[in-house]
Amino acid sequence: MSAANIALVQSLYAAFGRADIDAVMAGMAPDIRWDIVGRPEDYPTLGVREGREAVRAYFGLIGERHEILAFTPEAFYADGETVIVTGAEKWRLRGGDQAFETAWVQLFTIRDGKVASFREFTDTAQFARASRG
Image (cartoon, rainbow, N blue to C red):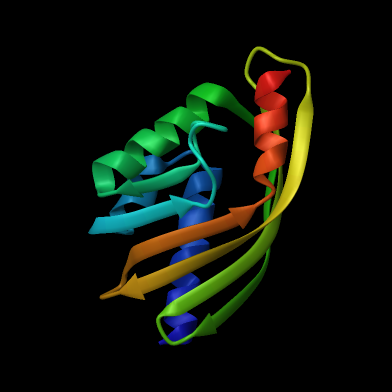
């Protein structure tokens, strides 16, 4: 099952890379819990969202606020229902000149072939600093 779970997560990254958010959403359980660890008052994409519509709104916010310069999943690890991915990203806020980059760890919990929960750990100070200019 671990190999199938890694393949699912890799397919979602590929869909995100194509900006195919419908395909990303198709891989989510209806009751998905999506958590970018951090405080929403520090940056609006941080915090917990529950349900597909809230996660779709999150991706809309990403598209509105960010220009993706690089998004690179680097290593995939699986243990049963859990897939752990390490990677890095580089962004520029729309309407600004300053780019920032950070490394991350993302944890996916897979249930019945869908992502039931997602949790990301990243350097949230980079996001907050970029939004302040």
